Amino acid sequence: MIVVKAPTNTENAVDARKKNFLTEAEIESFLKAAHKGRHGIRNFAMLLLAYRHGLRVSELINMRIADVDLDTGRLFVRRCKRSLSTSQPLDGDEIRALRAWLRRRINAPSCNSPLLFLSERGPTTRQAVNYLVAAIGTRAHLAVHVHPHTLRHSCGYALANNGFDTRLIQDYLGHRNIRHTQLYTRTAAVRFGLGSSDPCIFRKRIFLVIPFAEGGKSSQRSPPAAHEKRRDGLASSNLAADAIRYASQIASTTCVGKYAFLR
Image (cartoon, rainbow, N blue to C red; front, side, top):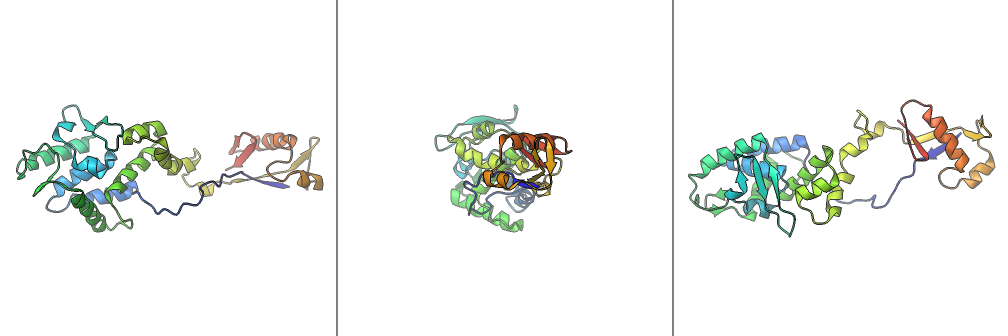
């Protein structure tokens, strides 16, 4: 028997970066914690928009009332860093959160400001948002240290896990370089389900065990010559063809090119 290991690309396999996003369950806990407190209505609306639209902190604090159209359910996202600005749809919970905040905003000291989100002292600052997000993350008992850009990353991963293609995510987040977007689609958990209802890739077989075939006959042991010729991959094109024919007869087998993967 020959054991053929599926080829793997080890380029950039080592990544020392820590987890920099929140899962959907963690986002739910985070937003629930944001809704509590004296300024819960404002905080919830502000951070919900930051997550749903992948906003940078500067884009969030500079958002204007004129950018929001509640009648049509549209939000104009004014991107920074010479990124692509887009008009994006608002979900129902976002519209309700914004309506609640706008009713409360009327009583703010700087209610005549064109900016959407205000603090008690006027426009919201970057430092205030950084402190607020970290405090809410602690209140939600999250293991990840949360900062405003964590919500942007969480948006990218959520889009990728829901099957959106790289180009759409690039435009939605306003990336100028698509390589910044590929991080989300390359590492999205949905990729490693391999199209199965079972989301865990570790329950899949990634080794193919095939009998060596010579002249249409199978033998339990490979001839020494075959091992000498076979330094990497399959020994020969004939063996590759035999492997695919053999694997295609096995249930729950996926054939990709000249390699077969048993699930």
